[in-house]
Image (cartoon, rainbow, N blue to C red; front, top):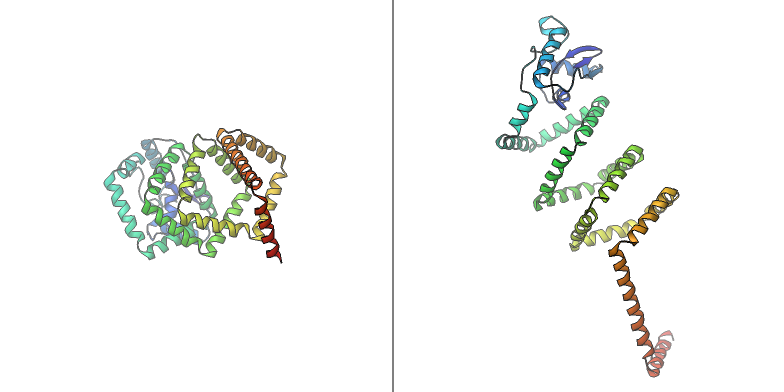
Length: 336
């Protein structure tokens, strides 16, 4: 139910983020009595809120309640009350019917083509961008949108779908190439780099964001096979000479920057000033040193160092006195 300055103005039935659909259509150029009224309210800075009358209902129950509430408050066009609803309610498809329709391959393909055609026009893309900017300029809409996104993405079902979709998309070499070029073009713009840096810095200052991200990183690192997967991915990535050279050049420029050196040093000192961080780092070092592959690598490195020392020692002591005198004379001549 939409409430303007404490007065109910619109009642509808919806599922998920359906209640925010009217706010989006408000900037699309649709001209219904309700949307025109909503535009005027926003332009006059009137207080518009969205209230959930009832939740967790079946579609027939929700349609019945919608009809009853509209009848209770009355519609403005009939002179019965303040509501801007055009119909009595109880009409339209329920959410399950809509899901079934949209899940059909032919319908999904038609919608994909229609969206691609629409967004191929730069004017439409710019208009959509401006609509999004206007919507997110409203603090209430921004907060509601963020809460809805967090609630929707918190389910394991959603995460599984996104993971499968992302894996399939990134498996396409053409898609990877386009994304790489797009990222490179964006990061070449100083304003884009600064905006990303500022946004990341501000987000890491929030303790809840920091705790959530660290918990997610720790959970991912403890998954079986995660380290092996990341290691294999990095090896394959760095096996490309262009990528390896670019990473080396970037790291050199990064670590030779006095400002970055000072920031890294300050960050490490601040982190190690915490006893918990020192204890956790010590525990990680011990666990790493006790891993069989690490022990094997250290043993092999020790054997190689011993072999090298033995080789150079034998070579030195087997050198004849004449060779040593010749070498010393050459050094003297060079120094002279």
